[in-house]
Image (cartoon, rainbow, N blue to C red; front, side, top):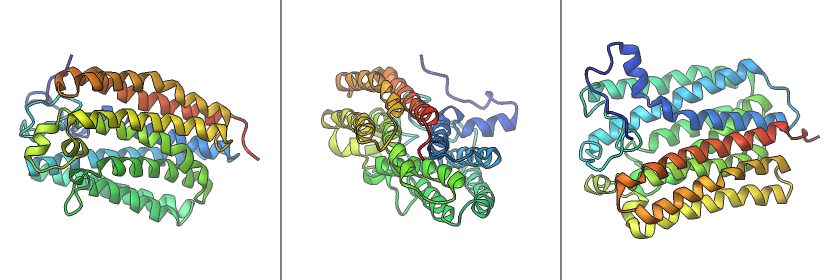
Length: 315
């Protein structure tokens, strides 16, 4: 069953309204990315510094919230959300806060950019207490999040949205590890890549209900470019690559054997792939597959983090 869209009567408390506009239910993928970064640092034998960890997690969530609002703003500007008649709320078609009159275009822009700006002081403090390299990781992360939907880059509209998602969530893992470690290491890149691919698959499957609206608005996403018949196979390919990487890296001792636990989310991804193969042209029937994709990413990431955390620390 789909949730009801927000209306002017939905929120009597303005704080609750602005919080809901960030789509908090979908911020879990960033929390999990941070946990993977903390787990890679722990596996490397580093004592976790709780104050740095909490600040990192909180402001990573704030950054993700800001990107969500900014994406809503630019999708309102290009008209794709307003034209989206096949959306499956709350998963696709945006938050509907602008379209349903809860936020003005200008208000959404100010709110989204304020959230991104709020990350900068925290990032500078974390840089001072960890490493100057964090500047470049943080700048790249914010840049990718902004360029995902904002002109002139509009990465999603150019069929590069999945690559942007992989880069963004990989940088969250690397940045979280960097704050604890004090330098950039290979391990978080390796551990973060399979998880980032699973997060990208959430975006990918969400493009199917949005196909017609995106095409009308000139957004040339991968699903628009390929068409649902061909694009539906891409989901299975990304999932296979993600789980294959976990098992390959465990087999080559690049990750500890316990990290293979991340592959236990595979049945959820493959069940979602089966549903997408069957219903790619029927958006209303894709809700279970979208839910399974979100479950697979979160569960796979949590199991991967747990495997790294409980493995014997490397010397």
